[in-house]
Image 1 (cartoon, rainbow, N blue to C red):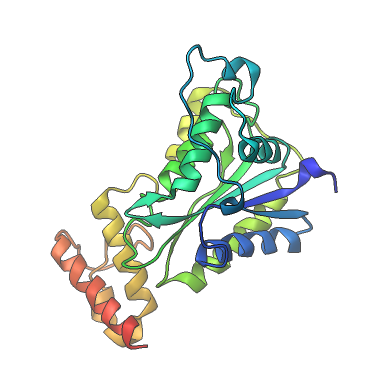
Image 2 (tube, one colour):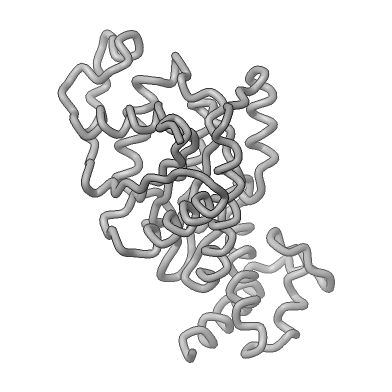
Length: 268
């Protein structure tokens, strides 16, 4: 298969063997099983320099950084010439990793105006370890990057250490789907269509309270047998599963479900 049909996976974590890597590898495995050619890049080996915010803004015309940055030159060419992009990040303090931020900010600066990635299939993956907080907030900058560069992104995968096996499975399914999208790009028919596309992707519009409900759902579903089904019945307004039953309007009640699930998880 030609190089411009490659499904490119980028691991934006300083830990090349951690859960971010596992998620990206699972997606690439799904792509390979669907007949795609894949490539994995560890961003820790190609750390992009900080953008210097040069004026005049010549990089937008030259389509390259004014300053020598071999890592950015390598990565940007890989992204420009791939058939689909899978970008993975760990979540630090409800946010995307610095490695990813340096890359996407310089990509904005050089390529946002010319939009050479219009219609490129893309998938963002983020893993919120520890408490699991930030499972959506941490992936939003990646999807903002996709949107501003006019890529056509698939749904994100809410991944935590609590639902990690399910997240790996879903990453593989989406990897298989994206492999079939590499044959041609489908650019948006204008700004309105692009905005509607991203507005309609699941999870990205959640409030912080909505994130907490989603996290409580994931933990409770993982540990349903241990904490009992009564706790699950309180997740009626679940953004993840649209359960039935009584409404949960109190974040303290959500926290109780979450903490019960955490205690059960830690006892495993």
